[in-house]
Image (cartoon, rainbow, N blue to C red; front, side):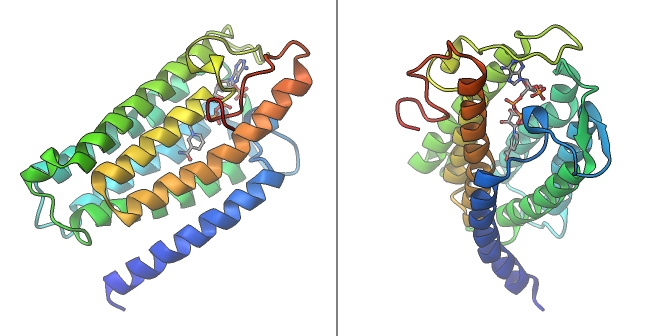
Length: 253
Ligand code: NDP
């Protein structure tokens, strides 16, 4: 089979799998963090879980980017740098910043995340190099690139800042939860997820590819149900939880 045929079939199926995943996650939250529970098999320390599952992404993206790539342009190289910026932070910095790195994480969660990251990096890496329109330097003056870049960096900043606000709620080794305050937590329970979703819709816009859109849709499928679960958990756990705060989209959801 020609690789392009395989790529297209995978891309189309990937949207369907995201839709199914969204529905499943509305009823069964992924078993890590506050939604951890027994029955999901052996576990490893959360810190190493994050590192292993997320390190797949910069490694495989770089591999798929350079494989058979005869047309690296400054623009596609810039895309590679953006991807690496996000994922080097997530795989090699974030796991060492969290306060409860020794908490167990089910290996099944790590396994599912690895599959997700491999497919995602394949689709997005190949989209930039083999199966997309060409990215000439003039693309950087296109409104889709400029708006996408603003969304990408805006979302990245909100995500990092909100994760940092969550860390301030704990001392090292603690596993207690408090009501998050400050930044976009004023409006939503999962400000970090809101930032992450904005960031990947920004990527979809600046790369203007279906692969980019599939990643943004997947991020939505993963994080919206989880934000709803977090929000319900906060409301049940804290009697004084701010009434007007939404789950993930300020003023709306
Ligand atoms: P959470 O918001 O559930 O937790 C982030 C960290 O903060 C965890 O260490 C958590 O501890 C701690 N924490 C959360 N809430 C509180 C609180 N109220 N009081 C004290 N500590 C708290 O995020 P995730 O762990 O699900 O995700 C981590 C990062 O990964 C996020 O930036 C997210 O956007 C990103 N992500 C991206 C996905 C994608 O599809 N692109 C999928 C999943 C995550 P504990 O672990 O004990 O709950």
